[in-house]
Image (cartoon, rainbow, N blue to C red; front, top):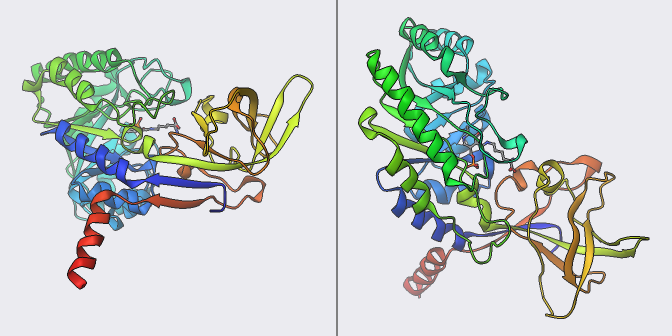
Length: 385
Ligand code: LLP
């Protein structure tokens, strides 16, 4: 197979979805499509009955094409264009997560023109730190996202005065790749305060959307291929006062698809520098941006490990940028030209962030089939015979 290529293990995805569905119970999970828009992956997730969290008009159209029901599609994003809002209105999506007072006025005007009433949730910025990389922290006052608690009542009044908008929920998202459950506990506790204040003002909220953010184990994907959804949901079961709303929604991206994807690449050259030994591979930051952008560290393994002594390599791509590095002083068995390496945990925010910088071709994609579809194929063959 021609490298570099993404390899998706649909069987692992299916096992992940089964566990997620049984752990989520009566909670509503919307898959954050931005994490991976591969059609087979999206179709599989929609088949499991999950909804979609979209951040652009094109994501809404993609979600619809991949079988997500409009009544399970939410539309978030700090900068929605008129055309994108119209797509949401036209398809009667479940909810717009709004992020500014001006957006309320624009959605109200467009909904009126189209003779619709838009359901909205206000994205609240709870000013909570998520102890994650600063580029993927979203819920503090330093971030552009959401409406602060101080401005919340004003926006609620604005919505009350807008005939073509109905307030149904509150939306939160504090960041991504969060592994410390205390951050979610803080969110739940902050939410209780906000909800009881609103209740005292006579404002009832139908649904709460706590966003996504559950992290995955990048250090040890082999031992933890499926995130601990049980402990994650348990935090909200324990700490959220569920007498103050009816429905609880989530927008999970990375935790659903992160571990089912890998980036495969070949060693082009091994070069001994003055202080470093470089393994120059044929995948670059154009194929997987996370290490260059967030200093993310993905596990790298040889496709055919020999079990021999390990050497230290800087695993670097071919792009003309010094940040094009997948691993520094990374321990791997002796490498030589042509050897295939596997960069693990690349299912989320991998292929979707591919760029054509340096006029690079996009990586290919291959799949391992899900067992259920193999069984289905065998059944079909059996029936046909
Ligand atoms: N909801 C909202 C409003 C979001 O902004 C995001 C992610 C999610 C849900 C899904 O979060 P997740 O469950 O995947 O953590 N490119 C970065 C991550 C950016 C996350 C953007 N927002 C990375 O590669 O780490």
